[in-house]
Length: 173
Image (tube, rainbow, N blue to C red; front, side, top):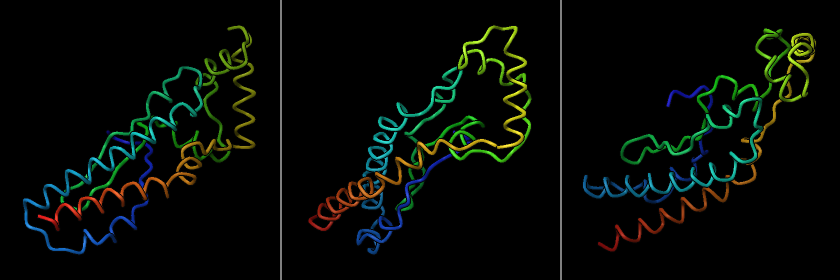
């Protein structure tokens, strides 16, 4: 996935887990990597289930559909989970934008669907919206970051509990 926008779980606590302090043999490292990826996939799937329904639909629904949350990257003990969007508009919706003048033609469909105006009225209103954005910018929705701020500790606790289980299994062998 070539992200225009991604959120990574802040996993400093995970990387400090006792599991990462040991020198593992290759076969053990592979088993740990598989389990670590499973833990990240579970965390990211939760993000996907809970965040995507809260995202703004927009004019077409394509922005909401562009979010994905099942990618896990990394080898060995260096694994990262990614939840993000391939849409170039995702960072703008999430974080907002400085004042700029977007092309009014790009806003016509949004104006028609969100404001319920006729095809004849939409271009003029789209121009007014563009002019307003050029003066004020856009305020970000912060849906993804707000959810992550509220739930990151729970995600990390789940991953750490899983790592505790892996450590018990590995040491018990």
